[in-house]
Image (cartoon, rainbow, N blue to C red; front, side, top):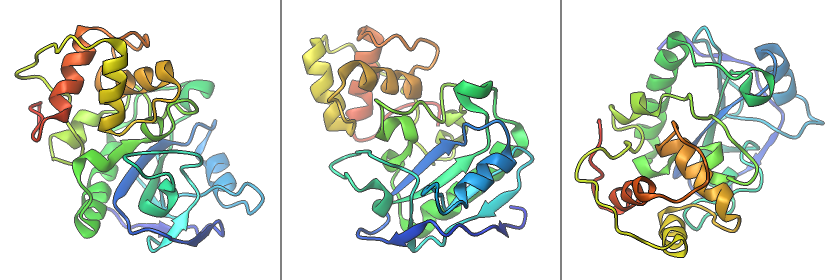
Length: 230
């Protein structure tokens, strides 16, 4: 991993929970400079622990023992104060509003060892390595359907998309939502939760409709060891 540089943000406070999660975001702004300016602006009241530029440069913005302000109103697996329980990484990308595009190889090549280091030091499980859209499905779509989760999954740095032993449990939509809530999602806005699940685990079709493939994928993910391309 190349040297990490520091551009410190004043936007942080004390944690109330131990670190058990890692949340990945895209910056969703026209360029990196604008994103860095916002993440270090006291009036913006947002920040992240790290930012990864498109050329692979990693910037440290908030010390890991401090609570960065990256998650906003969010929920994952019984945790509502996600900021207190997580490390947040912003990945430079214009996002859906400004021209969403694939993440460069150099960027992902820098992200992978950063994630691996954080996960090892904090003992974060694969199921708690999530995207912003997973923890705030009604508000967020990042890091989005182009993010290469499979790169992380192959190194056991994220849950894989299940590919083996798939079986449709034929749940009703209500049953699917109960299972989705058990998995970790906030399902108070059902279609948003379904779309967030699809964006993460079936990104080629994000329609908010529960079908056999979605049910089979979720059932496999609820098993102790999901079988995928990892």
